[in-house]
Length: 315
Image 1 (cartoon, helix red, strand yellow):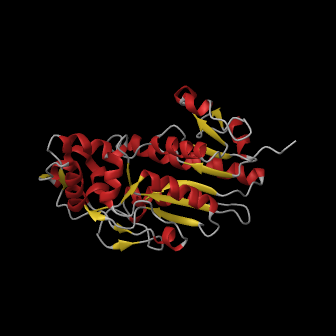
Image 2 (cartoon, helix red, strand yellow):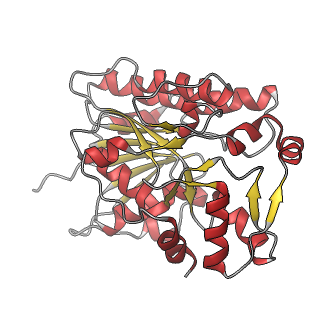
Image 3 (cartoon, helix red, strand yellow):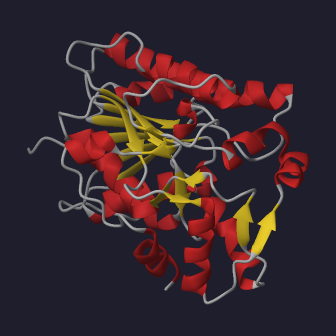
């Protein structure tokens, strides 16, 4: 009897990024285990997906990544682990309780996965979510994976998160921190929120428009996760951004041209701060982030430039 193929393990499967990753695994017939607190939200197509030998491709495991439990046993034989858990940074204003939730949802889920892999002596590669907020919100200089972290709340959160990612591991185990930028997806995230404004002719820049928008097409984010899992040279942080960041003004103008809409409006910085509070720092003052590790390890971006990326997403 042929041995069953080892499965990938995914935490955070029902979010927009997790769903797209599962869809790609189904397309390439890669078996996987998906951990979710809401199994009722799993698409029916996942449950009916079959591999080349008729086996189920997707095994749905109910469980909370913040609470150790039986779900951890599925890590024992995993061929690779992807952890995308973490409360949405811009879901609400950063009150003290919400800041604690942002930390707990990231650090505890990461610790529960990493520590169990060590106990199970499974040295499979782990790709764990992080963010370009690591570099801090101030400045417009160019940074890459070798650059130091910042000192604001978001930077501190990312640095603490990555200390958990890169905690004690097994010899030879690769731990990858996926420092993600603005993920372009018309169904979710920043782009989905921008589209109605641009359709109504109200699109434009945030603040002065000179801050950088470090974007990535959702297909390249999925591609980078697969690249990080399979490429032995990827070990440590990797910036998940396209190689051609634009200023916010350039981004807005390009989106306006693709949508055949004006992009003349501008949201003043005081208004952004009034509406969003401390979270505004991460939106209006950001470095230009370069994906040095991705390029140096041979990843080829499907969408390296913004205009073709938007045309693909909105065409």
